[in-house]
Length: 327
Image (cartoon, rainbow, N blue to C red; front, side, top):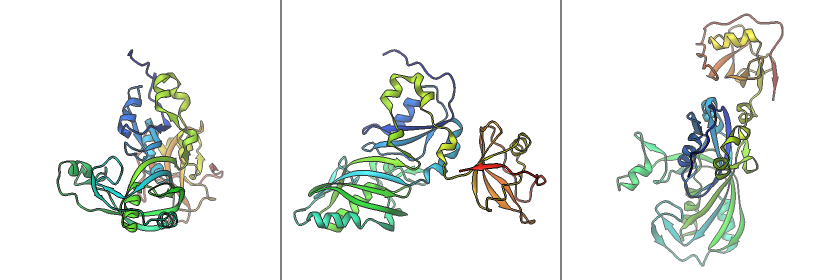
């Protein structure tokens, strides 16, 4: 196979990838990295078995990863009753089997609906969660003791899509960081027969969904089209106002100076600051001062990475006109 033509420069923005089932998320990122994108990351990994929306961050967009990861996720999954595995999915080693015939479609639908709400979820031993800097799956594969970890999660909606015990498909809308195979495992325990996840597709990672996703094979077959597939950084944070600064204000922000915030935005508001050319400049938060006025405190610099102003640090006088903001 000949060498692929790589992009001429590092791109900055979001690539919504339709990850296939099989490869790891890191393997997909490595393939994109070979197209000249050395600065690359993601906003939430997917297990090898899982397919669907993988939000890839390129260049300066890697700096917004924590904020993009906060978005709700929607999944379409499959399960099978009567079996338990060490990984909680169909690819793991079977640890137990039990009769499932007592489970009616009604009981199964009720068990899926019972996921809804806020609860504490046990993190699977075979997961990328870390203990003392080491992934839990690394400890599990070596037969070492894996500490039991829990995390608070929210399931906003859970319902059966197809229901033919012992198999079923379901759709869930959840907070960031939820392990869907752990939900399936808990369902198996609730019904007294065990259950494993058989398939999983991430349909959405807010604000992105599968309608915006590109197949990895298509990108690799036509790498010259990669720039046309990139979504601007500001589109990754649609719930943040975008505030355009003057050239003078932009220069001050690059120096870490707090400039006046739009008085229409209350203190505590997060916003994306841009320069006069609408280029992303910084992620900022409106913070009040002793005088009761708000100024922009830099949370994360973009394109130049300005240093955050310290509390009580430099500020500049109020200007008569305010920045333009938009949702």
